[in-house]
Image (cartoon, rainbow, N blue to C red):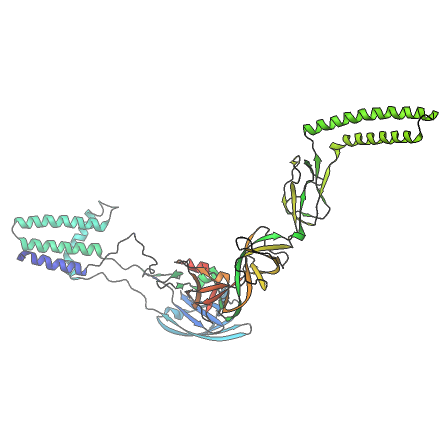
Length: 559
């Protein structure tokens, strides 16, 4: 290596060794940790068998969040006395939080607190230590070897750059422009010195300029620290949820209790009407529909048995009308002949030429012909009244003024909503007559009674019928449901509401366990059906763990 390059190499090694590394932008790699300049407010937690409390300080005040330990339910009617470094104080209730003045919290250090909580018949004592950190200061500018070498020269060049380069090229990257400008100045200086054959001095001057350029481009001032309590997912998968966030998400928990339960099966089903509490209104003859007095009943209207719902006025086709006219003409002819015969028999009967019997038969024949003729005249006037076969609610309607209804057309379907059945399909062949239930869609269960079962068809599916025992349920006719049927086999596990178990990002079933007042841990679990409102957790949760039963889906969405 030429001797004149050794000073340059030494200075470059110092520059690259002391210059900080800048991270590239525009990429996100999974769940990254929160920024280093974002910190939570100083806080202290205390837990007992009855209560859990979180004390958060800020601005010389202390905010207390008091919840039930088992359910995470806020306690809003408690009396909270606090033994502070400045003496005893009583917290003031403000909605779901308690506050008190704490000027001592402005002093850095560890402060011991004693909480006395009285809520109804529950009285408890909790202790905690609140640690106030030292105030954070801005990080000093990097003082590497290169920065010390060119300190005086860097100050002069920085002033020139601030007036000549940054102002003229405002809007672009200042660091990049500074490096380019200094590189140009270094080239000019190097050329001038080389012409005077002072290579060593030129190399040293150029190195000084490069050192300053690196220091100017990469030196950063430490950002101000931001105090912010924000819910976030930690790198290990746990979720940190401050108490204010828990109040917004309405997080509730339930202690896990292990017990023996009956093994259950899940059967697909559909809500159908009770055959003894439903009926159809159909037309016996084709005709034109007309509304009765008061109009057609609408969907959801309540009707009573025997109520007239519609009127059908029969309408005849052209060929039918021609046949009727032909029959009328034939009857008119026969009536005329019969009338003459009756008149002749009456004249002959007076002389005894015709017997009384013959005259009576002729008169009877004439009367029958006249009645047949009158029946043909009334064919178009014979309207049919459609009445309700049962009392109930109109489930479907197909009626309108002037509508032509064919024979056997279903005009109305009447259902008693208090008497519904569920038709389920079973493929297992197990005994399903023990007990059954279905979810009501609001976290509860609707009890079902066994009504009967048929034989398996060609697809080995056995139809099973259940009665809905509870009147006024939220189930709708035709709704698809999942029937949970208990069997005689027993299984040990932890019963939890269905909302407690959710699917993770990888598709497995998980629950969230409340491990500390503001920390939640996801646990993969194995579960089995139990009833319409609960599931059975058979692995993944230990007895005594506090499982999130409300708001688990919202916790799972935090990132």
